[in-house]
Length: 88
Image (cartoon, rainbow, N blue to C red; front, top):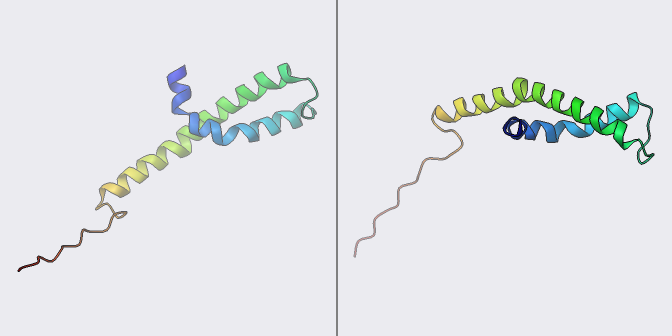
């Protein structure tokens, strides 16, 4: 479980605030009103589910595409310039 959460951690980071706001809206709860134990499991569940979907549909394909693009000649690095030799 911990390894999988580590794999989806970036997606989880990106989505958790949106999940929190959705849960707050769905439950008609305002921040800091003492309903922490209701909001926490709902937000965690929604965040993990949405992060898993985002990881598999967005993040992994983007990483594969980036790897494919960089293997095709490595366009992100310029060719090395030759240095002139100095003779005395």
